[in-house]
Image 1 (cartoon, rainbow, N blue to C red):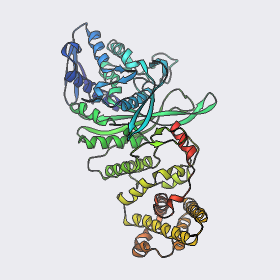
Image 2: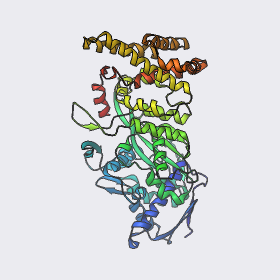
Image 3: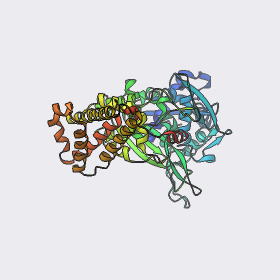
Image 4: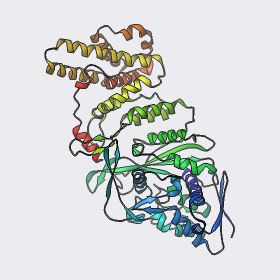
Length: 523
């Protein structure tokens, strides 16, 4: 039989096809490394930088393909297991469950047509610093690629394989009621596409409330990371390096957050090389009101970052500051969970778009969470220390940015000190006045919609606080921050300083977050 050649850059190869071809290569390398000779698929294959060549005996293609797909797509205790993706050491159970959930919410979102459940959802726990964290997953007895992978590729060999959602997440046939409207894949494209679940990384990420039979219900989404491979010989090294190493790294806040986290893991493994991988694309799949049962693509981000790009350093610093080292406890149920970060996705979006990392911070102080309905600013209380660390360590674009933050911190310290001295004998009044001062400054800054209003709000804060050594020493560097269209960034900086302040009075600012934390854990 004529060998099958799958080229990385052949016509029709999308980023998902290229990632799938990398998954095929990684699976073949795993077979060579760990599977005994007598259990391997009966055929030959060859791999170079651009091409995979596969050959089997005439008339024995079903035997060869059946063995290949049964090895590549496995089940372990109800969890999807893709050994070609894992490398020499499989990930821990909580990471396997997170990867399983991501695939169920993306490739296998179409219920009984793409997967078969093996009973009700199961729960398990893992410990982080002696704190038990519970995770859940839906056990499966079969899924599309394991049951039908061989049969689907035989279709491609006999005339072409039609693209479906399980092969290409988000793909929908526009005219399903008419004949001959499928997009057909020849064998050289079908085989890489069938191995896409191995070549990509899918994780549960976010979600939103959608209309389900007349009621608004929360439905989770999934982030699918698609590495744009440029060299197949390193695929078996790249894919394991992309995987999260623990439950903490499985927490995804946005598509840009997921892509930058993946690139940081590649850099840690010294594999972030444009000769090996050109970019990382992340697609967010989430239900919509028009069809709450499926997970169509809702957002896409493609990140091209080199090893020495300072934006990657900035994001790594934000991760260290904003990802909690340990899970948080729900005081009502006693269970531990990983809290969601609201600042990290803002930082990631800004860095990818080339904006200052704090741009748009005012939205976090005014918007409401789409799931809980609570103000997002209430949750920033839990990220205050991380925000403060970022204001001290992150690289600023100009000296004036740092001066604005330091000057607001100094003014708040002085103002809270004045209130403390005026109410030294009355702790209740002191606490109330600290809360009132915080709310007054927040409303004045967040409500500033013009350059004049922003200048007035900051001037009022600085004048009420009295002598400000930071402003005295660096006033000329602050003036350009109010010129032209920079006033909005200056307003963001002032609100960032207000949210990140650590000093006298900060522990007494009351934020009611109990209900929101419970809803956040449930989502």
